[in-house]
Amino acid sequence: MDRLGELEALLVDLKAVTVATARGAFTGLFQRGCALLEFGDREAVRIFCASQPTVNRWRHGKIVPGVPALVLRALQEEVVVRIRYIQKTKAEQIRA
Image 1: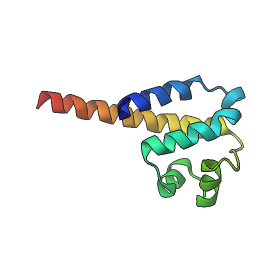
Image 2: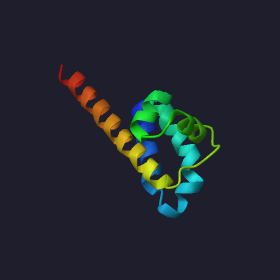
Image 3: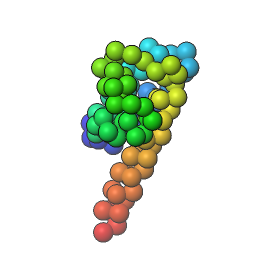
Image 4: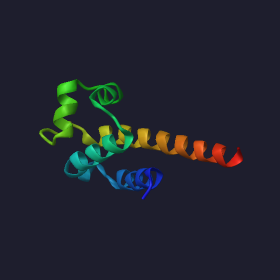
């Protein structure tokens, strides 16, 4: 599967998360999202408004945020932005 396909699959999974399921799904989705979006700790700290140690703990599954659904919603928004960027880039390449 190409990068766009992987991001679209992640988006489907993120949209399926509910407040009730967010805690259990958080670590896997957070790790997968950060990997696909190529977020290092600096980017994640900025985007999720959390400290570097906190992001590191989220990434390694040591803690889950108090309201994991909010962090996953922010991740979902970042995925949508990346998908749109890739789609726009591909469309421009086709036109060229």
